Length: 183
Image (cartoon, rainbow, N blue to C red):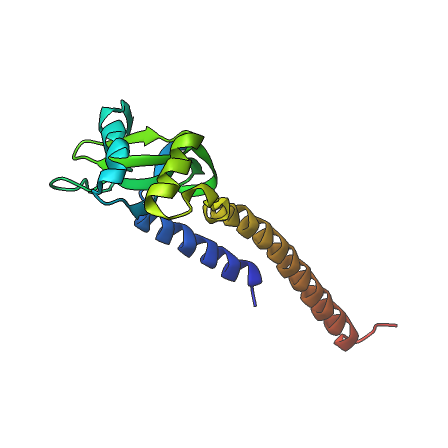
């Protein structure tokens, strides 16, 4: 059996599925994104966050292929980060700049970066522990599986070649043992 063909088929099917299902760029890209953590209500305690978000000039683009919302959206809290990808596969990501409040608009995402004092105030106003949120970087490194697949394919190909050479050597030895010897 050709193990290298099986590995190659699995890698190719994974790439095709990723290209069909992702909105990431095929080129090397460093894309800003927001991971939603929750929806903030319209309570008076959160009025300062709503006003600061609407007054902010920080704008994030929607990811390619994302459908902007229709109509007014509620204030949300999220973790802004940057994802680096190649061949539409995420290689790594890191929080940049960190916790934000944001409003999705038809053209873009308007965000307000929260400083440590504002994060503490948000924790107090909502009763949630947004200050304890850790960025899940491990969800953004699965693109390295392509490299792992190439390494596994190389090893499987080496095994296949060695098995073919051993089988050929055994055939040659059997043929020479079965051939009549001339004196």
